[in-house]
Image (cartoon, rainbow, N blue to C red; front, side, top):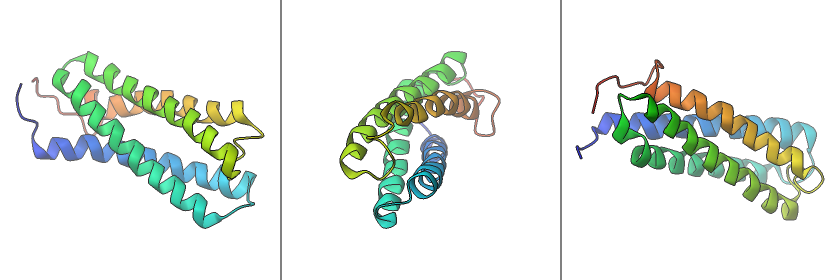
Length: 145
């Protein structure tokens, strides 16, 4: 096994954190401020930003462990996408459970929609993330391992 260059570590984790934080900002605006404006906006903001950074970090490290060793092969793209789908799907379920108690984002009233609103973007975002890093995207490192 070879060492992963520092700039590659930053690219993999940085792209993951940027994408999840952008998604969480969209959830904050649509679900937290527009559809369900009641409740603490400070609490909602702290929750979504913490979740975006934490989820992106987990996705980035999972990608480094599972996909980066296959860099230069198409399988790396699908593994990276799979990491996003698994982590994003789990987070959608976990957050719906937490939100059922807090009532910030409609998780109790619209549980299925809440979970689908996390899983579907995870599938699309996973494909985008994999393409960014291992396809023809802007952060792809085309050198074989």
